[in-house]
Image (cartoon, rainbow, N blue to C red; front, top):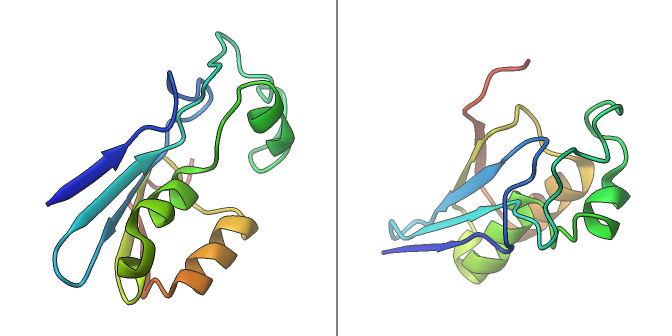
Length: 114
């Protein structure tokens, strides 16, 4: 069984990220970093990756990063699961902390560093 949710009206214009959690029972929880108010030009376009996340929430109305959205979908099934991240080569410190708290066993980045 697969559960998927985009959490918004459109994709992040800077970088679409998808996080997939594969639970121990094989259930898949998939989420993106969609926005409620997607922009034509990213308000963070002149910033380095990892900077200006407040614009994502304040301007684009992004609920959360894909990793957090997937964790929310998975709930207790995240414990000892594997998370696959597509669209980025790292997770921010906040996401890494939430991943650790949830008990994710492995995090695999499917995109190479750009």
